[in-house]
Amino acid sequence: MASIRVFLTLTLIAIIVLVSFLSSLRGYRQSMVEAETLFDMQLQEHAKLLSLITINRGQVVEGLLLPRQADAQLSAQSLIAYQVFNEEGALLLRSVAAPNTPMSPREVGYSDRNFNGYRWRVLVVWDQLDGHWVMVAQRLDVRYELAESVILEAVVPTVLGVPLAALLIWFIVGYGLRPIRQLAKEVRSREVSDLSPVRLDNVPRELTPLTVSTNDLLRRLQSSFNREKRFAADAAHELRTPISILKVQVHNLLAELEAPNATAEELRQGIDAMGHLVEQILVLNRTAPDQYMVQFVPVDLYALAQEVISSEYEQILEREQHFDLEGGPGLVAGDATALRSLMLNLIGNASKYSPQGAHIRMRVRTDRKETILQVEDSGPGIPESYRERVFDRFYRLDGDRHASGVSGSGLGLAIVKHIVEMHGGHIRLSQSRELGGLCVTILFKPLAQEKPEGKKA
Picture 1 (cartoon, rainbow, N blue to C red):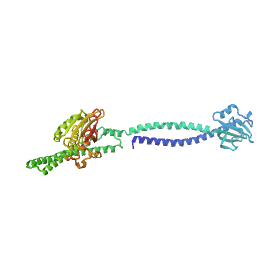
Picture 2: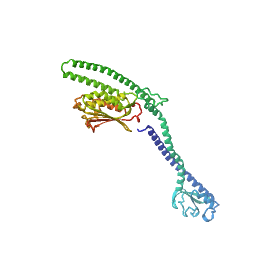
Picture 3: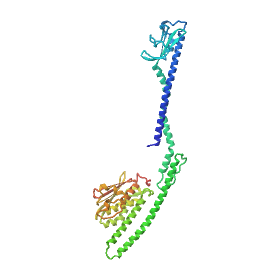
Picture 4: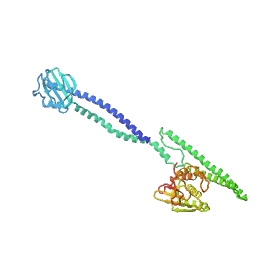
């Protein structure tokens, strides 16, 4: 259902139109019956008038025509035709519209006849006082025209009132649904960190269950978020401490050994990988949109990139890799800590999976529509068929059987994608045209079009 308001308005209008049509149809039929009765009574009155005019103790008006005033009274407006015959059937009187032959057989009562090119309603009356046959006729088309004009005058206001009723129903239904809009506005206008109960004044009885359910959901979400925060804090403490102890012990062990030991070195690498995995899981937990409740602030991606490169430059030098930072200031609304983690993962992946002496380039630029962060390298890259799957958590391309032999957790690009989505951006992978390896392009909304506030969950 697209809209409750539209559904209710259309349904009510359809009901009104249907009821109005049925009532108008019944009213039309009833009105036509009453009009027929009225017109038949009018014919009877004309027949009586003719009887009174023609009575003069058997004398009739000369010329076989009624006086001009009487004829006009009977036939001018109502288009009445009349005839008067004696008992033998000789024509005594007739109107201008009446034929010379009888309009109907001499049988008392009503009948429908055709003459003069029209259909007529004919009344035949036997006047016992004078011994005359009186025939009075009225055109049926005139009858229907007069009846329909009267009926339409009553029906037209009902038809014209339908659009007005639709307009009134539209506003009334909208007014009735206003509490729902107020509830939606109240929930939509909240900050992501505000999980306090929704409070509305004069809540309708029908909306009370929805308000109670919403508040219950907010309460359970608050409780769940608090548990997750405690878990992240506890995990950071409980996991980092033993791993740090293991690293110290392995370092001491390697120092005590007189000759390099392959098993001890593999143990050190395994502990380092486990420590890296723990850190990545904690970062992923902290940067999930439903957990990361912060106010965004203006962040210069170019300045932040300089800081991140400085922290990773030692690793780059160890592998004798060349790193270029190009572009200029690129302001976005975001969280510096999350964006730093994003850059660390991108630069770390580019350095780890590129061979000795490889070339890595980071570029920051801004145009009128977006701020672009791009990282490309001269490493092996990622085949096009795998570029969507590498964003899945713990997914490793070919089990990480790269030429570099570097192990990983499979969370780096998943963390990057989470942070990009949290900032309302878009990420895409392609092949670098200049360096030949992987090219990661991230599009952010520039600060001019994005208010400095967090993405609402």
